[in-house]
Length: 157
View 1: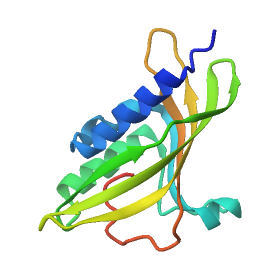
View 2: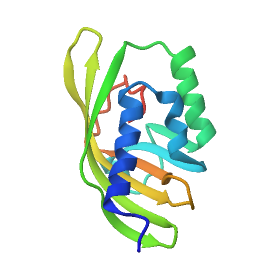
View 3: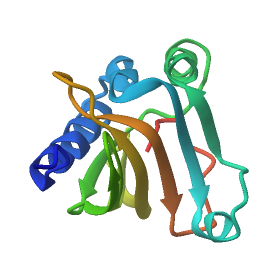
View 4: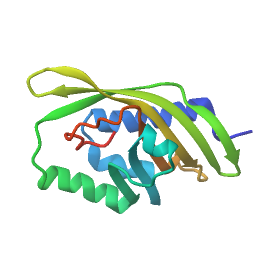
């Protein structure tokens, strides 16, 4: 029986989105292995296999550093997100590792109450199952549909 059930994949995505949407970003690293990849890119760059990313972190520590910088050093307009994540599709499974894809839409809510669709796209994930532990991302590649990325991309998608 697979440890990568639809229920567990949905729960992982829901907890990840809740962490961001509820501004509990200090816990974001908990969803990733120590050696991981978090990349935000465009659909065009992804299709062309270009490694350049709008956001790039290749360790959990880099993700945590990004959150610390966001909290302490970066100056940006106050905003928050609300994620809607579609059902994940399990693409491949080998032992304790699986690849999955999930569509998403993120609304951005600004301090003045204005709300807009900020990003749409898909998560392309490599997920690892560890005994007696929750699923974790070895890779989360955020592929945005649009090539026009707002410069206010501060909060992870």
